Length: 91
Image (cartoon, rainbow, N blue to C red; front, top):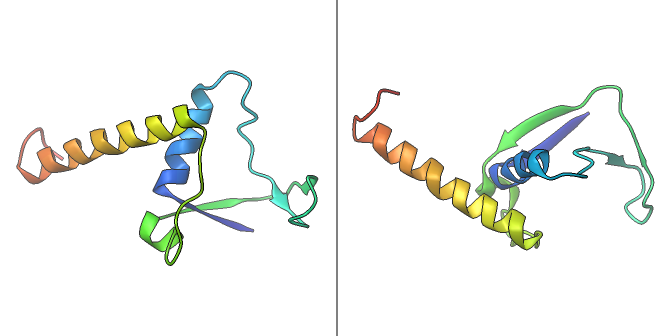
C-alpha cells in the first residue's frame, strides 16, 4: 500500500503530533462513504510536492490552527532554504 502526502499534508501531520487527543493515524478507507476503515499491514508514505498533489484542484480546508501552523512552518522553511542558497549556515 502506498499513501502519497503533499508537504502541506506532512506538515499537518507534524502538527497533529503536537495536538493532545489526536489519533495521529492514517487509515485506508475501503468505501469512501463508510466511516470505518481497514488497517493495512504496511503503509509507505511518499512525499510529493503540493503542485503534484493538488494539480487541477484547490487543497481542502483544514482546522484553522493547523492551517496557521502549516503557513508559519512553510514560511520558516522558505527562510532556511533562502539562507542556504545565499551560502549562510552550511547546508
